[in-house]
Figure 1 (spheres, rainbow, N blue to C red):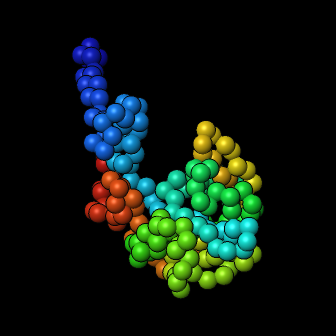
Figure 2: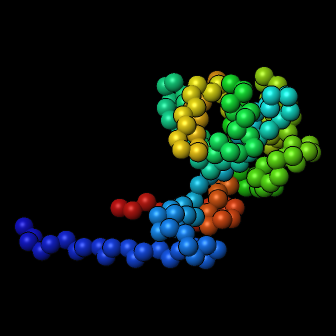
Figure 3: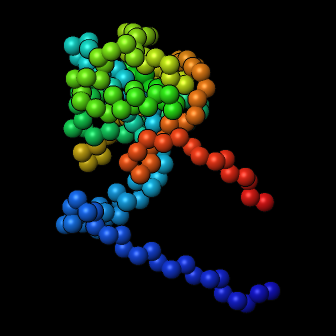
Length: 188
């Protein structure tokens, strides 16, 4: 039996405040620094506005919630331009984006009025906008919208979908779109 205590890890130093806002509170600075370093897959959510026009946005918060029943979640600000459509409509399409979809991701992260100008989408099930050439997409029915402060967690039950051509994953990391680098070997 080894009586040597396990080495203690040094406490992380306090992250610096953001250069763009030197008065940012430490909790906000820590949050932003940490999540910039957390690579996340890029998805796109689309639906229809109350007037029937297509709306959508990119999301890095997409997560699987349950396989039975098939549930997914995404988060969004209730101040977002697409929020009124998420409140009004009970169906969305969730798109998984690959490396070839970077331009579409940038378009859907850009000015609201320009997101569906062009031929990068078509009308799909329930009249919803489906992005072309994505790696996969799922039609879902919104089953719950949970308000948390100025944001919401949206729970979607998946009902149908389609598969596109395989592609490298599109990631968002350190405020830039990226693709995975090297494959790591499993540790033994």
